[in-house]
Image 1 (cartoon, rainbow, N blue to C red):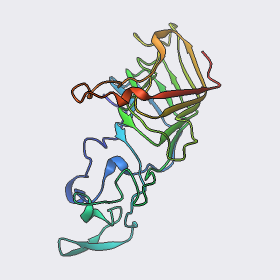
Image 2 (image 1 turned 60 degrees about the vertical axis):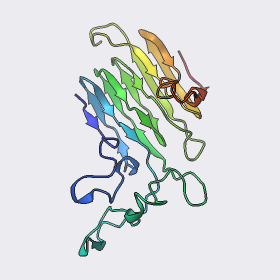
Image 3 (image 1 turned 45 degrees about the horizontal axis):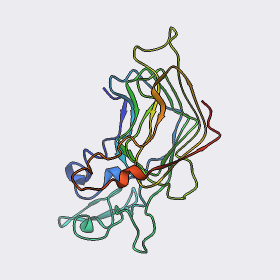
Length: 231
């Protein structure tokens, strides 16, 4: 169903012996460059619910005491005992109130022939030189935030395109479902081309959802900043 899936929201506190000692949805990615995903019945690239943060973790060769046992702890949180009871490095903010995010960049991603490309909620992960063609949704993105450095575009130097030629998948179109949230969504040097679905760029996909009962609509406050965007 999904060609690449990072299930951070499914296992938010790890699995097995690592359970409660790590927060996978907040673990930063390493170098991510040049991947090709295609043919996903659901998603091609599917980053689920990821918000990389500045985690305080043991090094790969370090040991520590867990349940009165001295064992390898590489990758575990140094402050894992605080994970469920107090401030820890998986939190949104550092102790001084500053953003605890870590910027990750997905570079040179090629996506084609999948129903969806993208994620649900995603922050501090940018896309540079992405090409998404012949997909049911060029990008699917529900919620995000302003980048931790307040400068990096969420998407730049990228192409979202489709046509109805011999390589086109049935039902494919140019359709970028953009995120909602009280933040600025920044696109720079991005091109939208070809057969368009309901809209080439639809702003605030998650606007209003999950908030009706609370009587608030802060998710509808997203501002879109478009620089050097072509249609």
